[in-house]
Length: 462
Image (tube, rainbow, N blue to C red; front, side, top):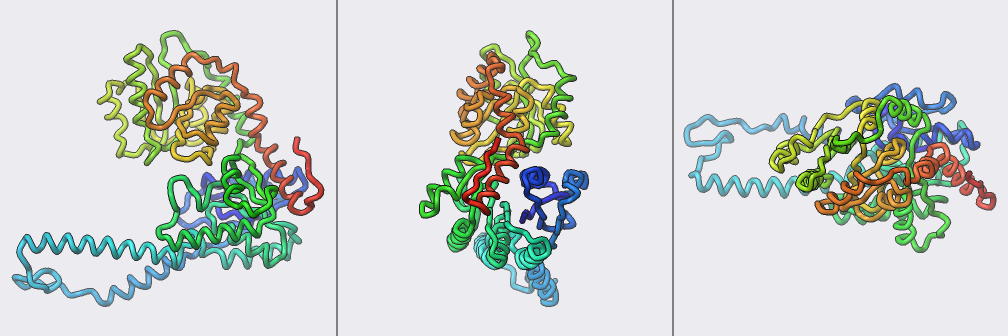
């Protein structure tokens, strides 16, 4: 298993891979993990290592970024040629004659344009030299060598690679080619056709990366996507590939988290008390297009109609939103609470204490935030603010709550009003929990591995 991010590193991408690692042995697959060594400034949680099965061997490879070495050498070289500062009257600090203020302003504006252009050229050049497909590519050479050694030592019969970072797919592809093994690639996110625009900085880089994605897809025995919508995107784009090459396995939840959540719920009163405002929680960060201010506008509109709703924002909140001041300006300062991020277990307890959740996923129809699968375990209504696609399809299929589009204040207000009177007993909570149970999803991945090795013998997933 090639996974750049893996415990003890703390990253959203580790949970899917860790889940598969934990349960694959139950279905006849015994992985060895190839990952990166966490950098000195990386966030780590050693407790995560306790979740890795004792019989799973993890090999880590250090990432040394050549651009960092290059920059350090350039700075060291420039340190010996700094211009002498002049203190002569009528001259600037570099010894050049001073000019009038108007000329200085013009020179300053020209200098800013020059610096901006130079910066753009440097960023594009730096990317082409050191960051195709991403800034983790420098681990590829050592990772491939270590991976081939793992194959020789363990008699591996398949290579699985998960991304992002997408350099992991290149590592897996080269190991599989050199070892003549089937390759399974697992896309946790879109790569080259992302809804918010190209990942790379230049047309040349984007063309290059598109070619790399095509090479990985062409060489893979199986391509796994983590939503059906992303699977449809790949099938449509790679029409020349067999339809059976592509499949989707969603993210889900770990079985032990359910018992923790049930314990928290047992100590909380679930029913809304008469006269008490409904309390909604957004458990996560808000930034860029994840803008909570239209929710504040909707809450202000609902207050005018006689319905009070409290919004708790727990997690990073972009200071540009100035959310608390914005709420005061809209006349609902007492209904908006902005709180810092909590450790995971404390966040789960807080989620048990509120009446419903807000899920913000604007701008992409192809992805589902991992937080949705935790929300399902609480059996509380969810306000999904999203475009039609992966998130809305799950919410509608299992009747998990209401849906509104980002920025549409009237839609959001109406969706909250429906939440306040909805009967959540009509929701298909049990079906949703069964569908997204991590153990069952791992069985699906094992079936994909089986098919890559023995295409004529298909495992039946319960």
